Length: 468
Image (cartoon, rainbow, N blue to C red; front, side, top):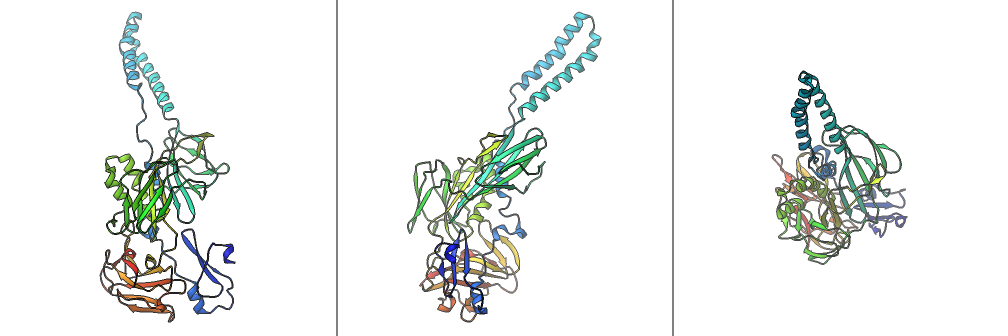
């Protein structure tokens, strides 16, 4: 039964068919498939939203961004060798004045052809051994994303780097699972071999590194409590972490708070709407507000996280977004716990996952041939046609279709799916929707058809259903 798989399934208008949210997606439960007509299957088999943020045809998307952020985290300083200057001065003193005085006293100054090379070789061996010992450790850094949108997902990417060649045994939190991360940059890598539950054995070359991913849905992770009113979002931070950058995101709009949000503090800000940073991503706005370009160590790790954030907030919902350096994944190296530096991106959906009537956002469910795609900030796709889906919380709510044209250009025509005729019908930009345009469970599909010739950039963020 549907209740055994999901909570609070809602009816679709068909006997034995229910639908409910599951995490960031939906599940349709059909109790009995026998004897269903073609019209019923056309109602059951809905188009799924396209994941354009991770399209392999248009760049790597979010796939390797977390590992790239991890590679930029942590210290970039050259290992400190305060004794090196004194060692070089000592070598010069020994091979010069001391060597000359000793050989002169022995009357064997011609032995300098032997003593100078011997002293030089001993000095090189000593300096090499001391320097090798200085970089003999294992360096780890991480970048993590924690998403709560009805279900909790924690994903971390780790860079494990070695100063000298050798085998390392790296253990991770047993509440999750590890996997090899796909490297998006060159270098000496290593194969990840399992040596137990969530334990990896890595044979690293000198100055080699590798990427390890960790995925968990452990609900024990402490997150801020986020609540909302019609205009504002309130965040109560009792996590023990300080969010040095935080705000809210809704589609292509973002709000960045002016101050940090410390542990035990409560913060408020208005929802992203009119007057928000339109078409300017949260990370970009944060960079400008805090002048983070003056801190390359910080900013270089944040740029890749903008792709991660874009993928996590790709739908029409409103999300709390926080950045912290205090999240500490549990990691051991050769059985000893180590601290791992790196940023963590916390994303929490505000309110219930179900969109409210007249405020349901458009999700792309189909396109024609794609000429180009800008899905990082403005979410624009150039195509000859684009189909979007809306969800109305109350199917009986009268709404009209609007296209603000804030991105892209006007199509040659708009078409809406007629559930009674099982086909698309042409409508105008400000037309009110008829009852036949809304399914029994509130689903609406609208297609934008581009001009016959030329560029046709469309954006789902320009489209909306407004109550009458």
